[in-house]
Length: 85
Image 1 (cartoon, rainbow, N blue to C red):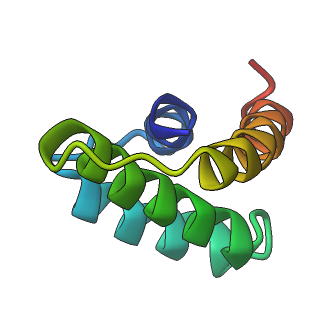
Image 2 (cartoon, helix red, strand yellow; image 1 turned 30 degrees about the horizontal axis):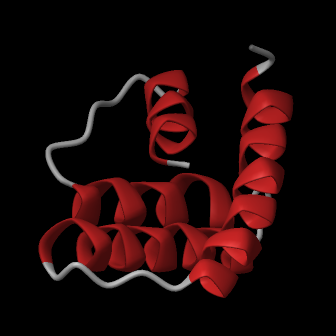
């Protein structure tokens, strides 16, 4: 999801400086234009939180991982459709 979101931002001619800025930019450029559903951005935000928990706090929830992997596939598919890549 992170790299698909970056591709969306690059598609607009911008680069991000942080995950936070990337999420704000995706909302401004794509959610506000009804090109990307907010629920997919929320999934991206949740993936970030879960990754941080796994990396820094040694916590892992298999059910959330499976659910997010399905949403990640949808996020990537939409990014491909938008960018044509």
